[in-house]
Image (cartoon, rainbow, N blue to C red; front, side, top):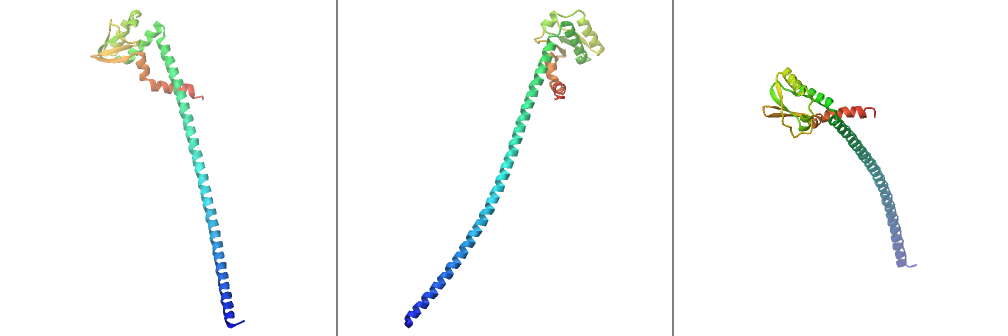
Length: 199
């Protein structure tokens, strides 16, 4: 082998050794990169899985809360419907009272709402037509005890039942509907306690 061939052979061996070294280094770097990428992917997978579990848990909580709210809203609406029905039946029962009981109730209302002033009590035409004997005198007596006076208007008011007290142009609506409307919240609470306290 000539000197030139030896030199060529030596250069090729060195180049081959250098190339193999570079290849080995590149393989090591590639393996390191792949290992790092796998570790990052595993961390990201864990993070995504954790976030997904949290999202599912949060969604479940919101869903349960929403279902609970809808349930409570429906229960409340049903209770209000029952209460309104009971109050409507009570109002109808009061309106359907027989005359003696009805006018006795009106006298109790006069006792409660009459003022220590001179005024007028107005009834509907139907009540004026069926007025029991002594009713007007009893109204006068009650008003007098309160320090005032009440005269019965002979003209029927455009009301369904109950009465209207008039003092100096100011009217006090004492109809059955007005009484129920004024006491609606209080009566609703009473009905709620009676009907739902055992539930």
